[in-house]
Image 1: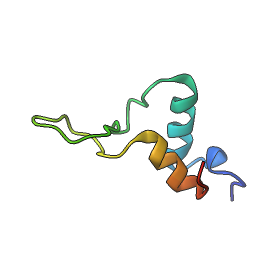
Image 2: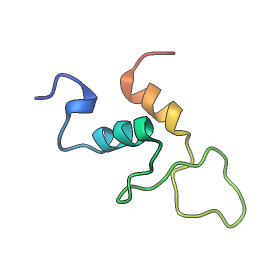
Image 3: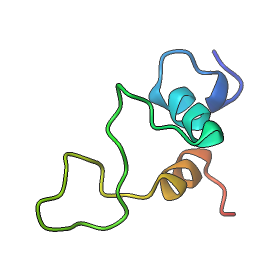
Image 4: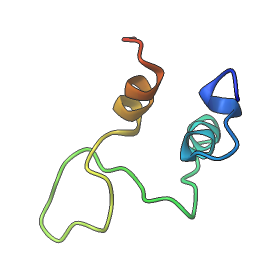
Length: 60
């Protein structure tokens, strides 16, 4: 078992954290968009930062 989310080999969080650090969207994961909009692309309507805080369980 991984001691941190960033070390977890079989979850998307490792790719999300790596992508956040490098400023790149992982190609095989849906992107995040903060606000819903007309004709929006297929994406997760949640900000990446909010997602990372939620996963970490701490309020920054």
